[in-house]
Length: 400
Ligand code: SF4
Image 1 (tube, helix red, strand yellow):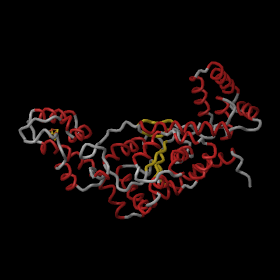
Image 2: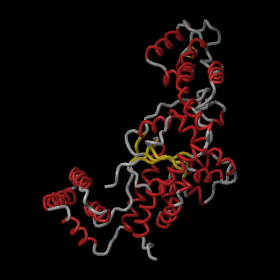
Image 3: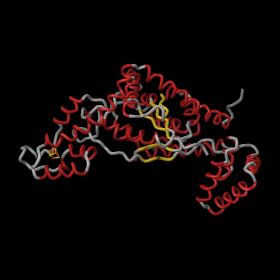
Image 4: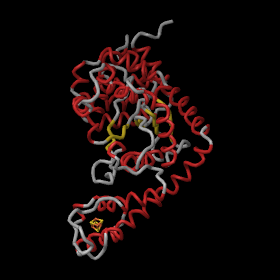
């Protein structure tokens, strides 16, 4: 019905580290050549947990954007923008909040987890409870078909789908819908109209999902329809409502996890991270001093890669031959740890070289980043306004 589109955002955390690169950015870079992608800095989301210290948001936003570009997010392929520069996200959030049951928000698993994990902060706020709804608005406003997420975020996408469904159910009602839908069927031309009606019956009477998919594909190809008729025909297939908001699918990220230098999750706050654009000397020092299997006290002691964080780096960075060399050499004390770490250092330095190069132009001329984002803000806003026009109309707010 609407074109396939990916939406994903990140809170502005400042300079990114290699854990972010392997966990999310690499996936963005892959997706941008496959589908239209919108990537945004979720600066309002930063306020849901850091409302008492907004001073870092601006700097963190620009640092993070330079890192995205350095990593290879390509503004000629994807749209980069800042959430707060598209204020329609807030409007949709507000409108969705009117009909979203409180229980849906309270049962989001990360809500309770975060309240417990961040017990040093007072998160008993309206904004924090509502952040999954703001996330829903961030995605639904672009009628995104796919959202890349890790396993832990799947319940959020489920909730977005429920919200879209509820919205369509409540506001997709239209006076004379049935007649208008039937008129729209006629506009398909007699052959297609016949097929549409057959497929609709097969789906509604016999529950055949293939019939629904086939009918949707046929509507995708029917270029001559107006947007309103298209929404009606998609809605008419499944029931008696227009489809205004699109239910997004979770696209599970198959990311290689890069742990921190001490084997825990890589995080700036644990002091175990390597920045995306860390300089070479510092990378060498950090890897050389990285802890290894505690049982390998002397060079002659045999070790076990399973107990060593360096091995986890090899799993991300090394090919099979090198990995075999590590396992054999470690278990037989044939190699020393410094020797074992060298291929990891080389691989990280090599990975970072193009990142340093790409970043340099943006560091030399920060107005380039501003211009990319200004274009992205405009492009995103245009799409958001299209959806909001339909949303306002459906909710009876389009009067003058
Ligand atoms: S040889 Fe490599 S895998 Fe084994 S303990 Fe040393 S650094 Fe770790």
